[in-house]
Every structure is written in C-alpha cells, then in structure tokens.
Length: 113
Image (cartoon, one colour):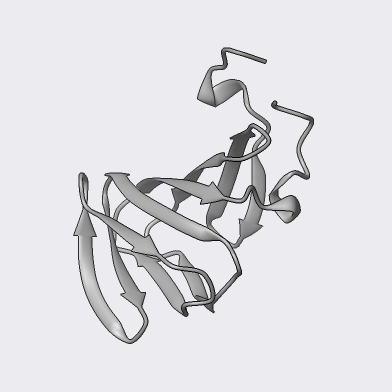
C-alpha cells in the first residue's frame, strides 16, 4: 500500500481514552495516537527505538526519570528498554510515533505494508 489516509487506517483502542492507528514497512512503523483529555499511558519499556512527536494538544511525558511537558511540535527520542510514560493534559492530544523495528504487537490491524 504505497499511499494511505490516516483516518482510513484501522483504529484500535489500546487503553482507556487512547486509540492507535498504524502503518508499516519491513523496517519502520509509524503509529498515530489520539488521547482523550487526561488519558494515561502507564510506565513501560520495550526493545524498540521510538521517536514521539506531539502534533496537537499536550502531554506530561516522563522518560528515564525526567519529566517534561510536551506541546505541539515537541518530541522525545526513546532508546530501547528505557522506562517512559505519558499523560495527556486536559485537552485532546494527538501524537505520532516512529518505531524501529516495527512492533509486531501493533500489527493487529490488517496489513498496511
């Protein structure tokens, strides 16, 4: 699938108030997250490299013990296995994440490669 529209990608609820859409190739994945106001992604880590960018709204982001407020245009580079968490501020928030390698557990949607 060489072209796509984000809103046409399958939406998956991953946590209360958090949805994800994904597109990928063999070596890279991009996910599109939407957070309802105050939605929380608890602390976790994973073996993937991740780059997160806030597109709309804002979030409180904790990365390896350091906390920052991220607004549209701000981002975070997350190395493999580093603990991190996020909480949307009191507004709807949209973030785009890039992954290497692609997350197999996020390929629960129909193939988008």
